[in-house]
Amino acid sequence: MSQQAILECVPNFSEGRRPEVIEALADAVRSVQDACLLHVDPSPAANRTVLTFAGPPTAVTEAAYRAIAKAAERIDMRSQEGVHPRIGATDVCPLIPLTGMSMEEADACARALGQRVAAELNIPVYLYEHSATAPYRRALPDIRKGQYEGLAEKMKRPEWKPDFGPDVFNPACGATIIGARNILVAFNISLETAEVSTALHIASRLRASGHLQSGQRIPGLLPMTRSIGWFMADYNQVQVSFNLLDYTVTSPLQAFEACRQAAAELGVRIAGSEVIGLIPEICMLEAGRFALRHQGLPSDAPKEVLAEEAIRYLGLNRLKAFNPQQKILEWSLAHAGLYL
Picture 1 (tube, rainbow, N blue to C red):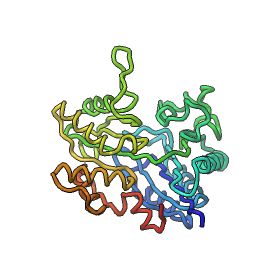
Picture 2 (cartoon, rainbow, N blue to C red):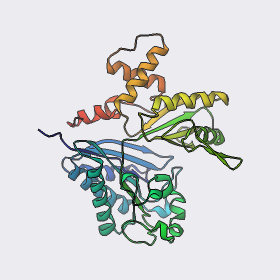
Picture 3 (tube, rainbow, N blue to C red):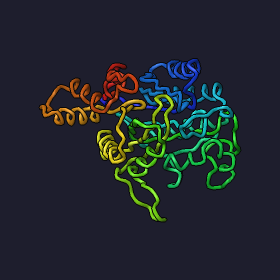
């Protein structure tokens, strides 16, 4: 028997403050049979909500379309503001093949979704990551550069015409970025300070692209990592916000340790961390084993114990609740009746 095809979708919406709008977005996903809504992760300060859902590819792409349509109906970008970079009501909508399907098949789903969003909703669509139509369009920050406020001028440049849809600015909903990609871990670390310069300095040291110094690019310490610094009013602290593009190259534990050391050099301590969306089990097990060894204890513990140790060591429950049954990818999928 062939393996069940499971596609994951993690759209990011530019709304994190109005519960009724967030619920409407979630209901749009729930309205599709076989699309399993796994998690809803809102942030008032970022004014952003991340939904995570999975299931058969046809159901997931339909649910993604309905959620994007609902966002266009309920979110007006002309009055939207928040600390997180964004270019549209549905800022980015990645499709991630989990099992039983290839990246090429996920790319076909992404392209079909992008064409439908453009044709039926009149929203400009940019393709990114494995769906990108040119190398310079592959990285999300490059497409998002200038944000919503700079999008009207950006779209006038021939190299930044959208891949699908109108090539004129849509002031109400902006544009949407869609594409197939690998699993990404969104991991934010809060620092016990309100000085944004501290977070910006650490982010520039750690991210793979590094920083400019005397006109020269100095590479960062963590490969396959993007990071930025911001003040997070939700916690009245600054954060170093990481996108770990390949957790097998740079894991959350590695990012945490590097950030802890960089912060300590500045006389600042870590206040806690948070995962936006879901996190692969292997990342939690690695951190749990490290935490036990750090205490001089045997690390061959059951995975439930390792998960609890990871939560404690990384401070994943200091900023907000972290339920491993909901936040660990494989556990959440299993609870929904989906298995990798």
